[in-house]
Image (cartoon, rainbow, N blue to C red):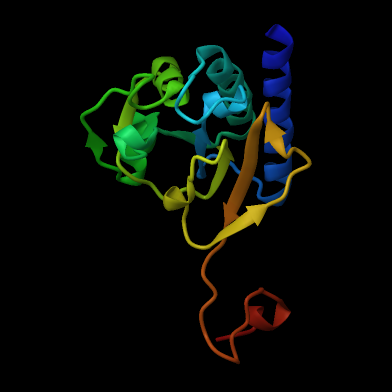
Length: 191
């Protein structure tokens, strides 16, 4: 089991490196994390949550947070309507309203429960709009991403046995045939 746990942490670290290459995240950004520890172990989602797997995933994410300053939000399971665990300070800065619930393994999931126990001042919020996301085990984080979500391909296809997907976001393109989407020298001279 210790080899599996070490491998899980390495897979998440490699995936985060790929995500960072596609969209460098920093202090002002929020990364939403969805993870089924059951799926990582090759079990059906929600059937066999593992604190050990959650700890390995969290260690990789916390290391990434320490390097970049990015804020983390951990999606709870469907029994809490996919609410999110995050630091109180992040929720306050972004204007997210706290809800009254504490995640537990059977209502929240192992990952969100573990994160709640590790954070300094954890709160749960109902919804967010994150700049990027990592989804381990098809937990469907899309509802918590800003528009427009863009898939990020990784050299890592799975974490343990769980399918891995990631996304970054970009602003919406607006305008018609005259619209320009990239800055250039011509724009510097506009008055």
